[in-house]
Amino acid sequence: MDNLISLMTTLSEPTRLRALQLVWDGQEHCVCEFMRTLGVTQSRMSRHMGVLKSAGLVSDRRDAQWVRYRRKPDLPEQVVAIVDAVLAALPDHASQAERHAA
Image (cartoon, rainbow, N blue to C red; front, side, top):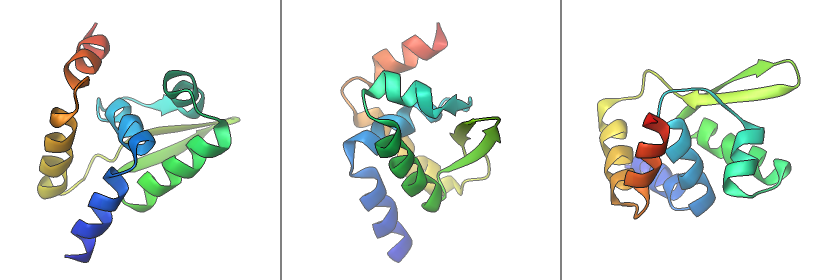
């Protein structure tokens, strides 16, 4: 139950949720991409990505001066189902998915 509460708390912040939308495609994304796409500062984005990492939703990799984030590959099916449902409920989810597919 505590894990579910923690997950829902993590997903309740709009910037984190929008960042999760980006990494949910399975590709790596650098903080600079989140900053540009979401219109936030580097420090704010790094804090949000730290929360997503602490929640076990993303993993990171240092690449020179950049940190690249991606969806954690071994997430439990229940967590994937919850995140999928939340992302599917977002109004602009379809347009985001279409942009990533192009």
